[in-house]
Image (cartoon, rainbow, N blue to C red; front, side, top):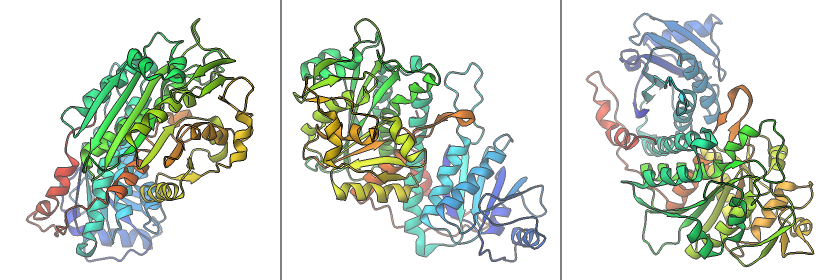
Length: 517
């Protein structure tokens, strides 16, 4: 899907040639002299349309409106959350129709976050999974125009928000696509190949390590998890260089358990199919690198993905086994279903060789985090207040929310054991915190954060599918770190001659660099 941003008044939107026009109407709507303004005012006065977020009024073949389908969509106070709700509803209403391109037109002033929310909502609502269907029916929607009124004063903010959002949705689509694939179509080898393809022609390098290389590194915890599977493990290393090589990178570590049976501590059969999503952390790292290739922020980033299956065959690790991690610490495995922390601990040890400015791991780690935070916010654990606050700010800005959780030393008491340096699980109480405390042992003084995305990486039920979170949060954090500054060329008004297209050329070109994998 291609995106374009340009200035667009309501009369120009009415004269456009898009297949459908969605007019976003806020509570403070001020009617102009154009046909759409008159229609909005009559609908409000007649009580047939309300401007609260998510309310819609549809019309077909409206007088003096060229697009055949017209939707008036309320955005309430005009906040990012309200815009996202409105656009999601409008695009969903258009999804079954024939429109291949739509215009999302703000009827009044728009902020950067609101513009970004419109992009995210349109991409999310139009996403269709097709990879393993015999007769795929991909989304018909190929182009989205986001129109804003004259906004010379806010052009820089709008452009930056728009470009970041477009890059984010490219990465989110990659993350969703790989997380949604069945485990037999997303093995460790498949992930490695996906990483290689992603790196081709992009501004980053890719290295793939197999069992022999991982063994030489002494990653005993990672190898222990992989032992029970016929699928060989892969350790994926991605490197994006957006600034001087001497600048310390941010290292992202994504949990890549491509399927998790629980091992010998096997899971219940109900909903076990959803354990294909246990590599959502890895998928988010792939997604972030797709976004980096699009946006090219001035920051260095390393991505690490320890990928394997957790299966219960005769070679699988057993409860009570003791393994030696890459750090040299020994681990008693009391529960083989707490395998994510075992693959992550070796990857975190490996990450320290890059001397990162920040080390962030992303993992569907604990059901306890789902109980604590549900599917609204990801759990955030950090040993550094500045890093924690920066991630919270990035999440708020990207509408990809997280919540700081505690890391008091007392929580580590349950990890003590008589038979190794540390046990891989504690009791049921504060399970997400004790899991984070386990990981903390392996980062030492490196500024580190752990994002537990077990509640936010996918949805169940009728809406079952990957969300692509927290790609948007991570990308925003990286952009903020790189202090990305986009071109300052102001957006110019779109006249009857179509002059507005030139004003948006750079943004439009940026939004079309490459296609999602």
